Length: 331
Length: 267
Image 1: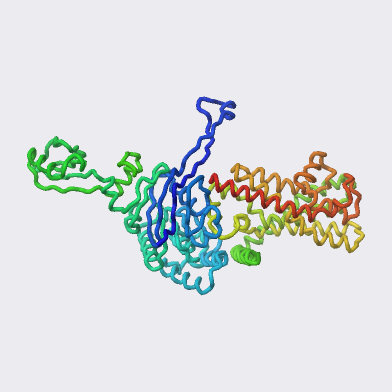
Image 2: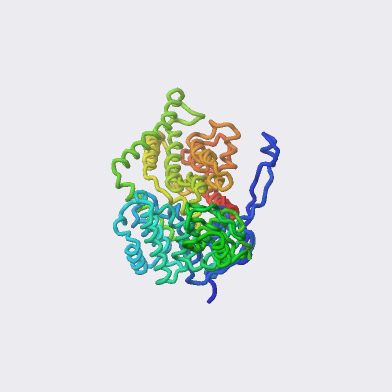
């Protein structure tokens, strides 16, 4: 099948004007220089219809800039973008009918109008046929439990209610692609779960393609079979969530319970991370030693009662990637 | 176009419903807007308490300028006044939301809000205009009636275009609120008085650069049957529709240029 989103060597450079170093006062104001900042620095990927893709990376890595180019809000500096067969920067208005967008921290609803009126206006704006609108609205109102707040002005809604309202609003015109920017930010566990369930169902039942940026890795664990990680404008990972562990998570932890408390165990290939009474945590690198060799070495030095090996949490790996520690080489 | 109009009507109707829900608040705002705007006319009355004529214009004639200017400006404000919010929209990033809908960006910005209370100030302008009709002795001809009734057709687009151009500056300088206010609210002040009371450079400014003189000054010379002390040729009195069309086209171009700039810089 032809990809619904394809991006080739996409670049976005911003000219940022900075005060020239060393220059001060009035002279400093005049002595400005422009620096080319590459927010997105040559990325390529494609997304098949019906995929749910997590797009993650530290703040300022280029996530929103990429999404803005996929929606046509921003015009790329160079590279090729096709979304639903259209060039977003040239055919932005046409493209709006194919995409839905939800920003966790903004709303597309009319602040002073009841939710119902906002939905109704969107029907006119997107020229959704009445029949289709009814079906969609009924479905979303039920799935997102919006019935009780339909007549409440948006400004009086709680964050969770508003977010669910925004989700419904972004889908009334049957977009094929849904961009979600931090859709669960600041929401409680129950609402988060509801929204995830809704997105999974939307993807399953309607085949909507979803591109999701989030800081909450559990969003991605529940929803996305594929993750792209962007860092400093480069795509440093594109693959399955579980394969992140293989790529970046080559550090593991051996947790041993000793017969009696002992000083940190000194074995080659491992570092004692933590000691808590008779329990010790030894961090080791897969490339330097095997779990079996390490256990044998430890057993030769102290008397063991129990042991477990901990795989790194994906969240920890991602946090390390975010932290800038080089977790492995980019492709 | 018919689509846009129907969307506009629906947005405005929803807004009105929302605002009319708070009836007392609405009435108070209306009354407040109406009475507060009278302080503007009080200035005119104070001047005429001391002078029989202002640069050759009687109270009724100045009231004619004032009323036509005020009504046109308030209607422009109702139509496009939301442009004052553009710097805020850009700064907060909400302008992005405008770019992901299948409607023009300008249309969406001007329909972001709808302040019914402006009808209060409009009412004030209308009242002053009624006073002007009572106090002036206009020799009505078919041509004069026609020019007067058609005045909104060009005066509102001229004001609105100036507003659009002023607001477009927000794409380059986010703190451009003052610029917007200067050209809109400031510009309106210039159309409330006969042009001769201002200095020569202001006269040139509002004739050649920001052509607000075509809102009501030149057409009013014709309706009131006054000679032009500035000595402009006769046809200038009828040039307003052309000026309005040119201005709308230019403003549209400038706005699109601004949006293009935003889409390449994201700020």
